[in-house]
Length: 154
Image 1 (cartoon, rainbow, N blue to C red):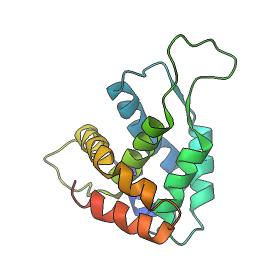
Image 2 (cartoon, rainbow, N blue to C red; image 1 turned 30 degrees about the horizontal axis):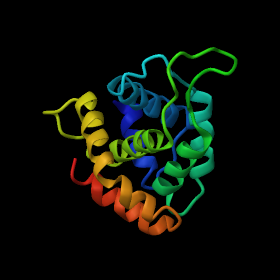
Image 3 (cartoon, helix red, strand yellow; image 1 turned 135 degrees about the horizontal axis):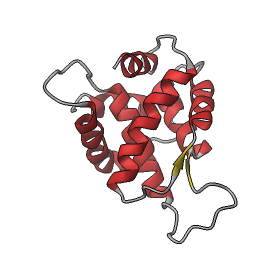
């Protein structure tokens, strides 16, 4: 819980180690991949740490982190391995990335709901705000505002 709390604070401007954000994001991505029956896809904590390095100095960190998660593709098929199922579509990958950011921006102090359930709720909200995210993609300030507002619904 301490890693999640530190990672959530980081998206709002606090300093945190890349290993914390990588561990928190990896946890959420695992749940979200399981929900879309993509259990065999791998999550790279190294790539997740690089995503945090990309975002940490940006003025709109949550939006920057979302961009980095989508651009760096920290989950998928391991290079060189044959994969019988098609990989996730760009839309599904973006939805998972949005859900991770929404979850981190949500209130983690509610003792009545588990982090697992919060991740699932973030996944459902990501579907609702997917079109808005795409429309605001190039304006990071507006994207960040929308992400924070949507996370407030969790």
